[in-house]
Amino acid sequence: MAAFEPVLLANVGKPDSYTLSAYEASGGYQGLRKVLQTMSPDQVKDLVKSSGLRGRGGAGFPTGLKWTFLPANHPGPIYFCLNADESEPGTFNNRILMESDPHQVLEGLIISCFATKASTAYFYMRYEFPTAWDRVNAAIADCYRAGYLGSNILGSGFSLNVYTHRGAAAYICGEETGLIESLEGKRAWPRIKPPFPAVEGVFRKPTVVNNVETAACVTQIATRGVEWFKSMGVPPDPKIPRDAGSYGPKLYCLSGHVNRPGCYEAPLGLTVRELIDTYGGGVPQGRKVKAVIPGGISMGLLTAEELDCPLDFNGPGRYGCLGLGTAAVVVMDETVSMVDFLHNSCQFFAHESCGQCTPCREGTSWSLGLMKRIMAGQGRLKDLDLLLEIGDTIGIIPGTTICGLADGAAWPIKNAIRKFRGEFEEYIRRTNPAGWMKTDPVPAMKLVELH
Amino acid sequence: MTTTKSKRVLTDEMIAQIREFIPRYPSKQAVTLPALHVVNDHLRYVPLQAVVEIAEILELRPADVQDTLSFYGFFKQDKPHGRVRAWVCRSVSCHLLGADQVLEHMCQRLQIRPGETTSDGSLTLEFAECLGACEHAPCMLAGKDLHSRLTPKTADEFLDKLIQ
Image 1 (spheres, each protein chain N blue to C red):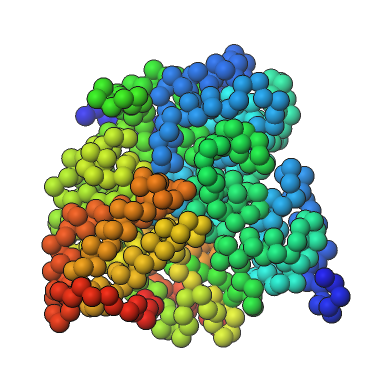
Image 2 (image 1 turned 180 degrees about the vertical axis):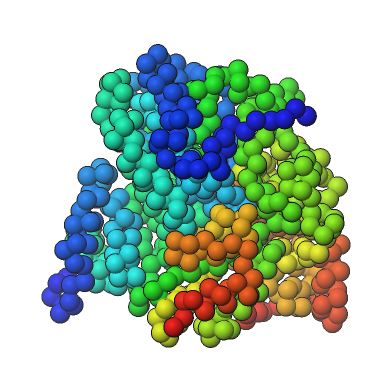
């Protein structure tokens, strides 16, 4: 494989990379100048549409197409929300972009607002990124001073205000309509769709919600062009109707049991094995991989036999995972107990379920209850079927919830138990020799806190 | 609403800071979260009286503000959190690398449970769901500082500097 030159991460690690002067010195804001001086908003929309860029936040919806869902000739206002609520376990690429190269993100945000005719943008950032918060706020202030924000940007007649809005530690705010509700000052309960945000979003106006990495990609598409973007990645699969392909670079987050955890840029379609071995330097102490989360915990699990899974938008799905998600790969070595992993996963979703939809609120908390029971040596084989019943019935895909959080809670359950059932059964038989075979209803266990 | 003898808790400075947010949004309710953060930054908690006063500024019912506040679980209401608030991540990448042992160790040493504050008020220790810093796992966010690759030993060093 030819050496790949990082683009999205090109400035990361350079001194003062987060400052306007460093960004401009590396050619920053040239893409914005080009767009404002030579293109119409519709041309920018077409540019992004033809690039094949798909949203980097997890769902992979084509960005340009999302923009075209805005009503034509709307009198305004149209709002733009930048989703910087990155909270998917295993994922940290947005944080790195915002901490080390906030202007690349802002340039893409400004171009995106020009394309969508938004004159107000809200930069919704999760609370736990204090360094990113300070640097993005400073970068925005610098943009106003330099004329990249405010009224009549660079003499183009286009005006834009960007406001940062700080979250308060709730995973669900990363769901785009949860984010919108949170921004409006309400509890972050996702909305029933339709109407989609493009038609009725924040403050009941047409709204686009895009991810931080998506905005950075827009910057690079505007600067380097569609051909560059489409020169890497995976073309559409002809067997999948309307497949949009997986073009462009991706920021892969690698963590867990690897020698060199970190954020790595490579074309979409890199295999899990390449990421772990070539970029991550393999598993510490020569241990073997046991399981891998392919794209944030919501996406489920790959086994050690499935490491040739390509990380493109279709790849993980072919191996029974939910999808590419955020392309955040978490490696578990052979010492990890899948029972312990699933308990941790259930704990996360039970804590982060917003409580609006009963199947998710109850399903996530009962799955945690079952996992606690198994962990405490009171599990029964029947509990695995109960867990699978929860996994198979909560979420958008079975049609029982409003948003995808429950699908994300379900996938680790389904993948862990179906791909590692023998280990779960062995654990239950070993830890509950007197009761593993029982099937009669048991009273709920008094929950013991982990800590 | 103001017939009780509750002492007002929002200072003129806090009120001015909250009002600065109002022109940013087409609805005053959207200032709820920024206002809660303003109060929390100053007082390290958001008592019910502050909720009432925020509601007055934003022309909302106190219940609207309380509804939003209670959703997040971030804003304490009974008493201020410690001078430092530290979150130890317990999600998957940190968990794989020993976050539980670190949190357990800190709790035992401080004789508090996650969510509680040391008796001298120096530290509130919490667990966090994914801090988004998995390359630093296991990690802890203490105030604005991210602590990487925590062990019980480095956690002790952090506590040694903080306590007394």
